[in-house]
Length: 128
Image: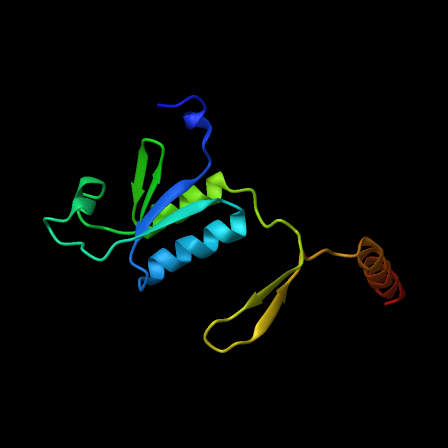
């Protein structure tokens, strides 16, 4: 093991590109800011090399250093715990299927407006 290898932050994700569970893990990793190296696996049969990581052939598979996690629920939970949440930057995301562009932004609540609404509610309650 090289010096500093234990500090690496990139997680290996093994899964099928057409699997919606693998795509859910990729989306969650992107939202949480977790670096993922993707490995496309097509052979999930009993003699496949992927069975050394997932004995039951359950995917997707996350490998972080020596820790191996398989199954969509376990992988999403691990990514959720490992990540830091959305970055808060305004991002343009283009859907490759319908070519629509979506803008993601960090949602913030204006505290002044909330305070005014609460005060108005209290005043109305006092009048009636």
